[in-house]
Image 1: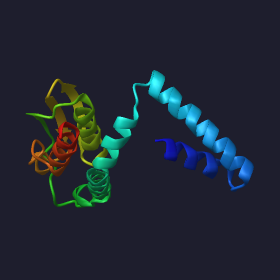
Image 2: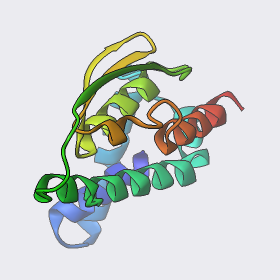
Image 3: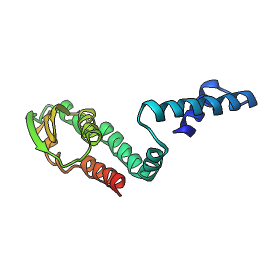
Image 4: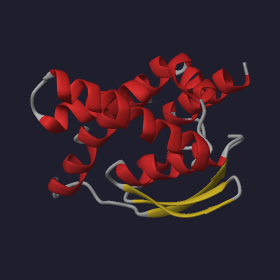
Length: 154
């Protein structure tokens, strides 16, 4: 996180000089110390994030692919296909609130589906078509989130 703060400082300044680098080291350290003291952050969490970085990148890649996927566009643009909207409920065994919220947001960001409610581990999702509801409970999102959570425990 410290390196990210430092890089952001340099990028926002637009050039690299000795003064900018020195101020960046100090300011990034101050912001990092603030995060550690008041936002429940620690170097240990940095290490955990680095360990799961590959899964996080894979998750983002899958999410972007699902967002750009043209299945919804084909469904909406085709006059011959009748849409069958449906509301489905399913449960997951994700352990952390963060993972559950990430799943809910990923479902909402994916065209054709909206997470209507999230209560504990139960999701209520509106799908533009019945086909979009297939495999929600064991989707690639859920599997990758399980791997990310497994890295935290391990």
